[in-house]
Image 1 (cartoon, each protein chain N blue to C red):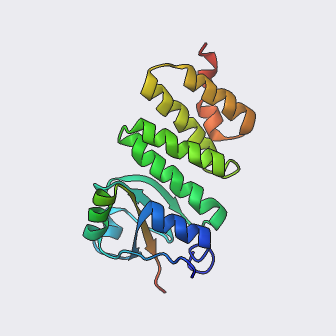
Image 2: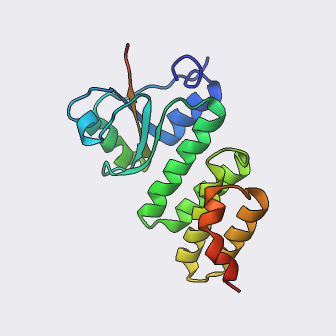
Length: 151
Length: 33
């Protein structure tokens, strides 16, 4: 990550501007134990209370790190029930990184967040339709499969 | 001048900044080698 990903200008600007970057050694006490870290790099997105919302293990290149971190930011909003903020972050991810590995999960969660925000089930159906069209082999398309029945 | 990631190294300071700046924390466990 230090050789390729973090020196990337776009990555560095994103991490510096959109996150609070915190770095500790893999054997840090007590954090490595508290977060059950077994391998490096382990990247975890946390809310301001220190609660975990997203984790990746292993190398990510510049083209995948930013969308993965956006997914983490969006999930932090989503799981704290800030659905409008979550939708805005998922929209950004899907607009800027539609081909990334994080995009299908963002599309799924955007549909759920829109449903939670409005109590209208149509966004769930729309999420399935878009997932089926754009990411037909994704596990998130499979998870959204029941929503095809919503009218 | 190129942007560089300025890492926090203290848990408490990072969370305090996250609260005051309304941001998410990226916690990176790394191998210093």
